[in-house]
Image 1: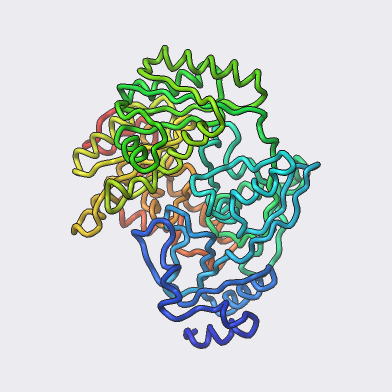
Image 2 (image 1 turned 135 degrees about the horizontal axis):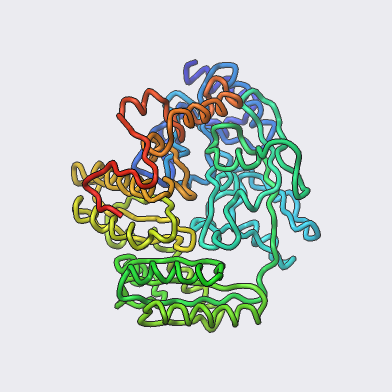
Length: 484
């Protein structure tokens, strides 16, 4: 179907301002937060309600037009990259908080509602929504569901999948599904978990019911500095090994510490090789006891300096530095390539050494900042896109980090999703039979493959062309990396 024909059909049920097709209007939608990949769609549509979404899906189904759903565009894996011959559907106008139920401790919201807005709306009831990605001021709950987002407090409170109860979903064929429920369990297969993290490939989420939890009575944070990254990595294992599950536990290396401190002045120790932020929350007496135990473990693990937040403002300042790590990277490099892999905690120190080895090999600096408590790494590979070949080097460097994660028993993503960025590494992590099952699930919901095509799950042909070999823990494929 031609662009003009598609626009004409769309404008029979959408107002003219909700159908964009001129190049200058399409440009803001050409990429998500992973700006290395860019593509203009044929058309952008801006529905305002579920009925309009259903009509858009029906038209795309009838005309066999690919469709990509987009939230706030803060994703970091190319998951919202438009299709050159398709429709890009932005859900940003569906931003109504339908209901806050303080007795059931739930909130029912549309997909365009910002993550932070849920907690702001629930605050008068003494409640909040736990998952808090670094982009929470901007990212939308629909995108959080699509990518199964986490955040600095996911160690204790879980990812998006652990904090939602029900979804309304439209399939490409126009069928309206209600998945999950408001009770603790529901009969049948766990389709709620299947839909969460499905990256817009199975259906379009039109409504989300999330869990709300009480705002903790007290929260306090320990900031520990180390003169050696391996000591900091071991401290993480020591805290968890002592039976403590912190509200959040984050690590930053020296280059990250300096970039953040110059950007935000959070009070970080510039002499440290690594910093750990470890927070306790809950009842006041419980927090006092846990903070004392964490302080002792940090000392025993070799911390050279330990600070404990004394006020809420100071605690938030420490966290603000961590959440500003990505924008702070812009102070030290024209561009950065953010990776997202997850490993067993016991391998933290070794994998950090491996990343340093790769940094030297590729001649590219790397800022390491990550959710240390659950082993979710976010290396920021620094490069200059104006220098020929540097982006390609950064991508190859990032791929080696992900393959290293697989080799030590981890996975290629913790919360950013696969999108376009990691699709080749899917060939490395999964066997043929597993990939076939993924495709079968996709076909059950979207037989024509119209929803977000070419993302997340590679074709078997693609894997064969790459010559990829499944790698599991203990199996060595890459001889140019350090052995663990």
